[in-house]
Image 1 (cartoon, rainbow over the protein chains, first blue to last red):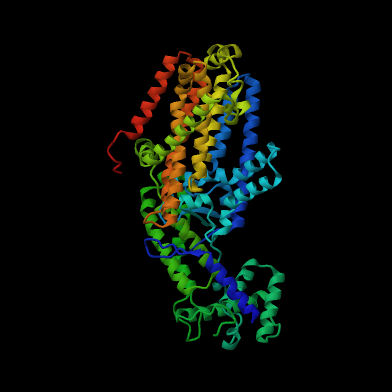
Image 2: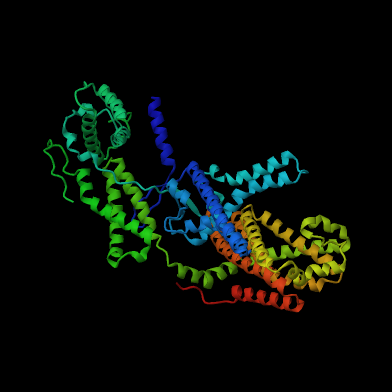
Length: 289
Length: 346
C-alpha cells in the first residue's frame, strides 16, 4: 500500500499549507501559504525589473544631462534611484492587489495575518526590513573583501549569520520573512482561475452507461485527475488514461477515447457527488467505498 | 441562464445536480468577476452607485456558492475558480481603504506624531546612548589625542584630526568661500547624496532592531562616538563654538531622526523580548506597525536634514544664524511631535 501512503502524504502536505481564514460571513477562505520557491522567484523578478528600470532611467538621465549640461539630472538620478529601491515594493504592495509585479506573476499576494485590512504601516515595516535581509549578507561579503585583515573564516561566519536572518522563512511553517514577522503579514496564493466550461453537461456524456461495479473502483483523487486530463485535451494522455481505466474495469476498446472518458467522468462524478450529499467522501481509490 | 433540459435519468438520480447549481449561479460569478476587474483597474470611484450596491450582494452570493460547491461539487475547476474569486472579492470588499488624500492627511496630522509620541521612552534611551557615545570619545580624545584615530576613519576625517592646525580646521567649517570657488552647483548633488546615504543608515538601524535591539544600540553608540571625537578635536583648538554651529544647523534634525530610527528598532527589539500579555508574534507585529510609521517620518526628516546640510550649512556661514536655524528646527520637531492634541476621531 505504498501508493495509498503516498497519496495520503501528499494530502497532508497540502493541508499543512492551508490556513483557516474565516470571513465575517462565516466562510473559511482556506488561504494557502505561498511556497518559498514562489517567493524567491517573485523577488528575483522584482530585482530584475528594478535593475531594468534603473538602467532605462539612468540612460534617460544621462541623455538629458548631456543635452542640458546641468547637474540637476544627477540629483534627480540619485533621488530616483533611492525612491526606486526603497519604494518599489512599498508602492506596489499598497495597491489594491497588494502585490509587486513579481508577486503578481507568481500569483501570490500579501495579506494581514489577523484578517484585517493590510495597512500602510505594515507594508512599510515589512519592506524596510527587506533592506537588511538582502543587503546584510552582501555587506558582510563586501566588508570582508575590503578589509584584508579579517580572516576568511570570520567572513564566512558573518555571511552565515546574516544568511540565517535572510533565510528565516525557510525555518518556519508559515513561510514568514523577518519582515512578515514584524509587520504581521503573510504571503498567500492568489492566482486567478478562469472559469472553465462545465464538462459534466456535455451531450456526449451519456453515450455509454457504466454499471455500479465499474464506477466503484475510483475515488475523488482519480476523478479530479481525470478532469485534468479531459480539460487538457491532449490525445496521447487521454489514450493512456482511457486504456488504464478500460484495463481496470475490463472493457474492450469499442469507442473513441474522449467519448469513453467523458461518459465515465460524468457518471463517476454523479456517483461520487451523490455519496458526498450523504456525507460519504471517498478521497481516493484506496479508501473504502 | 436557463438550465439545460434534464435528460431522462434512472429513478435513483437526485433532482439536485451540481451542473444545474452551476447553471443557475454562474451569471452571478461572471458579474462579480467583471465588477472586481473594474474595481481593481479603476478604483471604487469608477463604479456607478448601482454597481456599488451590487458589490456586496454579488460577494455574498459568491461566498454562498463556494460553501455549497465545497459540500456538493467535485468539479475541481469550479471549486478553484470560486475559491480564487472569493479570496479576491474578500480582500477588495473588506480591504476598501480611504482615499489617498485622506490617508496622507491623517498620516501628517495624527499618525506620524502619535507614533513618535508612543516611542518616547525608546527615543530617550537612544538619545542617552548617543550622548554617552559622544561623551566617551570626547573625554578619551581630550585626554589623549591618539584615541582619535581609533574612532574616526582617516578618509572620513579628511585631514580633520588632532594634528591639523586651527586655521585648517576653521576653513573646513566655513565652506561658504570654498564652496563658491569650487562652484556652487555641487551643493544640491551633495545634499541629495547625504539624504540617500543617511536614509540607508537609518533604515539599517531600524531593521537591526529585531535582534533584541542590541545592534541598533551599538550603531547609535558608534554614531555618538564619531561625533564626540570630532568635537574634542575642534574644541581643543578653541573652535568648539563654531563647530557646534556647523553641526547644529542640520544636526538637530538629523540626530533626532537617527534617534527616532533607533527608537523604532528598539521598540521592535523590546517587543520581542518582553511581549507582555500578548503573544510574542502579536507583540512584534504591533511594534512593527508603530515603527513603520515612525520610519516614514524619519525618512522625511532626513530629507529635511539633507537640505539643511547641503544648502543651509554651505550658504549660511554665520555661526549665530546656524545656531538659530538649528534651534528653530528642533523646536519645530518637538512641538510637532509632543504638543498634546485631540485624538484622531475618524
